[in-house]
Image 1 (tube, rainbow, N blue to C red):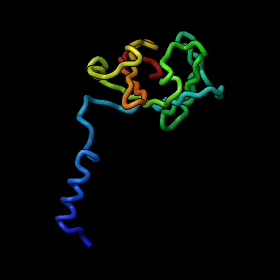
Image 2: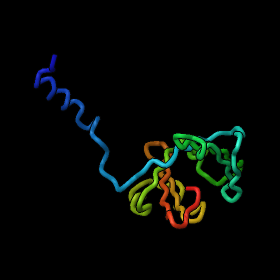
Image 3: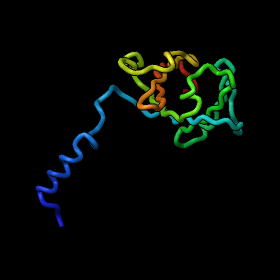
Image 4: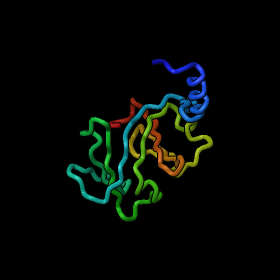
Length: 137
């Protein structure tokens, strides 16, 4: 049984703005899901200069990365306690325009520049990667 055209129009009107796709942005590609933890994990790597231990990214089919922070790691509490999604972007500077930046652009490794924003109470990471210079990104 097919819904009546009137019902279809009413449903479409009720959902307008709820199910619309987000504004069109420059190219974004899922990179990883970062999950803060306080527990040591097998295979974690200590990034001493960043005061963080990371694990799981390379082994996870879905690029889930576990992050354990040193007590004095200089990051916002939001980043140290709430999971974040990370996207690779073509133009980091453009992506940050008009956003609430909570970690300014920085380079954790050669060829990689990252920054974090807060979006509706959640941390979001953006990475711009120079493929010729980056390793293990």
